[in-house]
Structures are given as C-alpha cells and as structure tokens.
Image 1 (cartoon, one colour):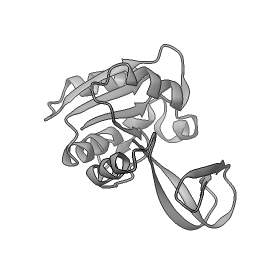
Image 2 (image 1 turned 135 degrees about the vertical axis):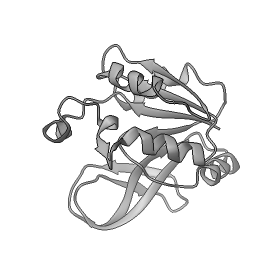
Image 3 (image 1 turned 90 degrees about the vertical axis):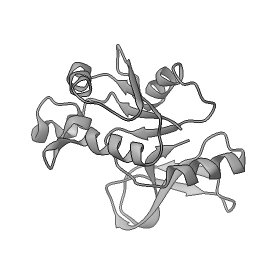
Image 4 (image 1 turned 90 degrees about the horizontal axis):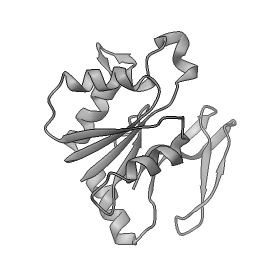
Length: 171
C-alpha cells in the first residue's frame, strides 16, 4: 500500500508552542509527531511513503536521514505553499499505484487502512474520506452527507451539537 503524508504547512497556530519547527516535528513524548504517523503507517501495511514537504523541509529530511524504516520513504518539496490539493497533486506525480492513502501530517486518526482501501475499491469511488462522528464541538468544520453516503457539503467551524468531521485520511 502506498501512502502520502501532507507535511508542507507553516503551522502558524502552533508557533507559540513549537517555535519555528514544522508542525509534524512538534515533540510528543520525546519524539516528533511524524514518528507516530510513520509508526502507524508501518503497522497498517504501508510499503511506500511519500511526504509532501514545504516549510522547513530540511529539518524533516535531516530527521528522516538519521533513521531506518521498514518501508520505502521519499519526498517531494513544495517550492511555494500549495495547500492541501497542491500538495496532493505534487506527491501524486511520484506514486506507482492507482489508489493511495493520503493523510494530513498534523493529525493521527487511526483508522484500519486496509479496510478503508477495501471499502474504497468495493465502492469504485473516486475519493473516500475517513470521517469521525463527534458531539458538542466547535474546533472543527463538519461534513454533510447524502443518505447514501456521498459528501454533500463542507461547513466551516462553528458550535455543533453533533456531526461528522473530516479525519484527514483519504483514498
């Protein structure tokens, strides 16, 4: 299974906490957050990982070069910030499989990736999003679905008593 991690963002909301580090390098229990993402992807059966890097990419590349992984790992570098869609498009130029897992580099939403991929292929879907149901929240935008599970619309952050949020994992 081939996977893309989107790790090109500036992390402006976290700068007060992590300084100038890229978001995925924020320390968590003595390890960069990226360590936990890669560990999860390895356990889930990813054999090839492409990181879409941008801001302070040299910090991430140096950290990666000091480690050994049980999977192939490579990266693409956004010369200018491309946003989510642009980061995906850039990384997709390097993929070798028709269907790939894409995940945000600042979120760890642990879904069974093989099941997600099987669902995606079984539905013959263009794109599949992993959603999470939450109650009483205001930190996330919501996703509205049609009765048969298609995305109808996305809504900005606001107080919600119940709803589906984008988990940051896609096929």
